[in-house]
Length: 414
Image 1 (cartoon, rainbow, N blue to C red):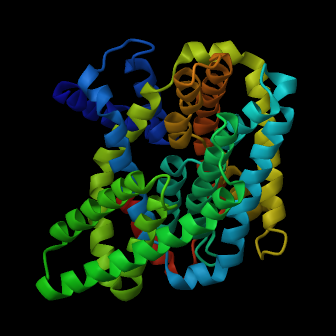
Image 2: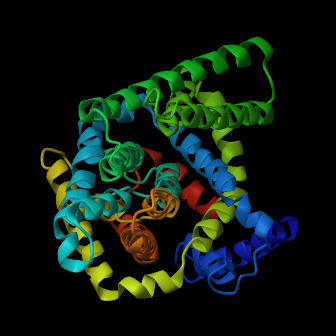
């Protein structure tokens, strides 16, 4: 396992540098590296490394979401609050519903099986979206209208909603749905309990920091440790109390930024350094989940269904922004920011297949769902990352009053 980690770090840094020189996002190179070294192509990763991939990806995702929380100022959220809620619900539901309706026309799936697929694919990838939005925020690009903050906050909520709807549908499919209204009520409850617990833990951490005044590095480690515990608590409470741990992680960063801005920036800076390592682990391990043979099985039909879903999502984004002050180019940037799929699809794509096998049901639909989930990663992660980078650089303008900050950030990134 140690050798594979060293191998991925060295090669990950190399491909990141090469892709940036080619003016492409470094994460594309890391995804490709994971695909090639993963068990489905060259099979050069140690079994222990792959066995620990789930935990490593969770830690990397926590670091992403903590960084997101430390960039979500209350002032900006107040400015874009309505759009955040609309973007969290409308595009994902439109995408999932479109795939549920059209699925049987493209693939050997029923409407319910297509709905399972639809709400796996409907989740936006925070692993791709959040780091790119943070980069724009650091350069103050789009800051006047709070565009990157809006995208980042809505993407986190979008994931929670997609996963909860998928869980409800899976219960129906497996014949264990229980009371549908209880499950539907679980969506707002999970959001409220997640945000509430995150705000509480952030406040308690602030009191702890004020009492003992630990160094910034120790504060960062405490924040990460508490975040991991919150994710573990979600797993313990599964089926008992709806709880969105990932929203709790973001809320924890938000309250620290709100109460102690300087402290939040210190922790965010430390997290930025940790992200160099975490990003390599996350994207290479997501790439390692991609079974290229499954991609070929679905072919043009699977790709066509994904494109239909993206068109519905794009229409949902534009509908959500009808009353916003964004220009059309800025709205188009928001559209492409909701294209990438990666982490949720890698984690959830196999769930229906495993459930079908455990219940002794025919597993062919599960194989199709997994294949299309994998194809959605291969198609949308590179496309979305490139589109965000290209459109963002042309559309988002640095705030004039912060031009010097933006120029300094650009110089540092080089």
